[in-house]
Every structure is written in structure tokens, then in C-alpha cells.
Length: 246
Image (cartoon, rainbow, N blue to C red; front, top):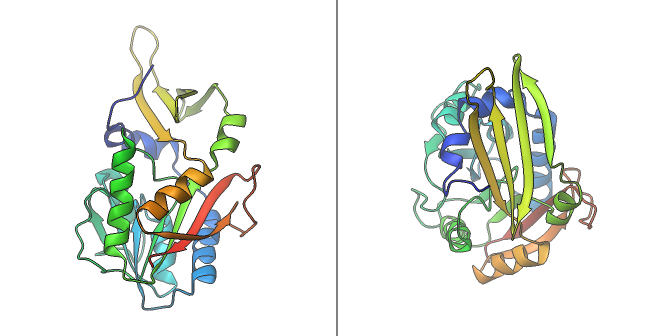
């Protein structure tokens, strides 16, 4: 089994919104609070929410007085974001490998909820980091919210089954090389094939991710293991990197 090169173009659509209709809003508030408290970002600063999805973090950034802008590649997720109060006119459809902003346009940047490592080649991930550095002014803080590869591998559930609105959803997960895969099958049966979607994320260790950041002249400074600011460890559920563009 494998996944299409750009699986995210199909998956982050209506089916995704149906499967995950209510992401954790309190979690988003904690994540934004961690960024604000640990970076010194101030009201009025211009912040980019990279891969903003349906806007749950962007709404909190805006609510904190930041001049935040969200970009995402998915039209359905951006439409969902536009339904949130206060986000009209703050959303841009764009590919994170080629951001449509001028150099040094932002005072800060966030990339929440494992929205990195999606691409077929490591070189494309490197291109994303180069774009992050380009659009940040010197000294600007960033936060990358990534998975803890060791935690994911140790707790990987190979198969699960559930329902959304009475429709069966089957998920198969596996690790192959340096990537973790998921196959999502929705519906099917009685001679009808299911809708099939895929996820694929490259598994960077903390050391590898920090090395990659430094190679792109981004400076990782602090590692956290959750949205409450606990120090990162091997049993942490998340890898949150706070750093600066030197």
C-alpha cells in the first residue's frame, strides 16, 4: 500500500470535515497561549498561520489582537474558516512551498497540528522551511507543532473502525521507511466500493528536525512536549519547537 504524491489535495476536503467536525477548541486556545507567552509576540504584530485549516488557531490569534493571516491549500477548509467570526478577509489560498508574500513580511509565524512533512520528498520540506525564513523579519519568532515520531511509532494502532453519521469508517496505519501512512475507507459494502483517502507524514526525530531548521538558518530555541509547556521527552505526545529567524 502507498499514498498518492499529493494525497492532501483530496483528503482535506468535505470527507475530512465530516470525519473531524469538532476539533478541540480548548486545545487550540492553549497552543496559541503557549506561542504568545513564550515568544513575546505582541498585539498588532503581523503573524502568519501556515496551513491554517478551518481556522481554529487563527481565530484565537486574531482575538489576541494579532494581525494574523491564514494560508491553506484546501478550498473546503478555507470555506469552513470563513464561517468563523472575525476571519473574513484574513484567509489566502496558497501552497506553503511558494508563499505569496514579500520578504520579511511577518513578525511571527505558527504552524500548528502536524502540518509539516506532507510532501513526497525531503527537498520539498526544506523548501517550506526556506519560505518560512524568507517571509519572517529578522528576529521574528516561530512555532512548529509537530508529532513526536517515537511516541507515534510506539502507540501506532494498525487498524480501527468507527462511524460518521451512520457510515462505516475504517482506518489502517503503518510505518514504511521514514514515513507514517494512513488509509481511510469511508462507506462501501453491498457491492459498492468505499471512498478511499490517504495520509502520509515524514517522521523527523527531534534531532533531525532541529538540524533541518538550522540548515535553513532558522534557530530552534526551546522544545515542549505539550500545549501546556511541559519539557519535551521521549514520552511526550507532541514536539513543539519555538525558535527565531536570526
